[in-house]
Length: 167
Image (tube, rainbow, N blue to C red):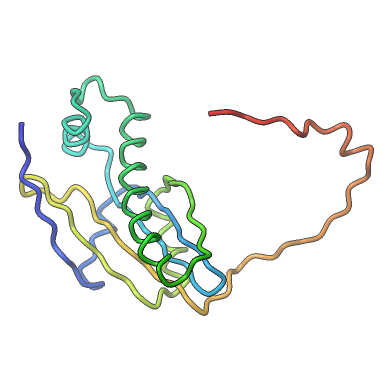
């Protein structure tokens, strides 16, 4: 079945991210700024049906792993396009892998006081299934400390180290 997709631009005051239970986050980082790209969503029947349709399967057979892999790949495409555009001006940028977070984590993100925010509501057949957002944080210090520790050679030798995990 074909779905009618509409994309609506929203201002910061009409963000509906609070209506979603979770989001996928990817970041683009430089020494001067961070760009946070976010896809807000619910793992509900309507969203599962949309994703299943895109994967040529049914919602009944769609596993959570495939569902979140699909959303993560959409996030990779979204964030990657922004990074490629920025690379024309700033060659040294890092990009994260997708991270799935609960909606409560937005409080921390917004506490970083982004200097720019932009949102798009993605409607499928008249129902908003996703909200995509971009947040730019510049001139903001990260609020964590790195503590230096000393480890003895014996402790290092006893630890399982050097093992790689392949996915």
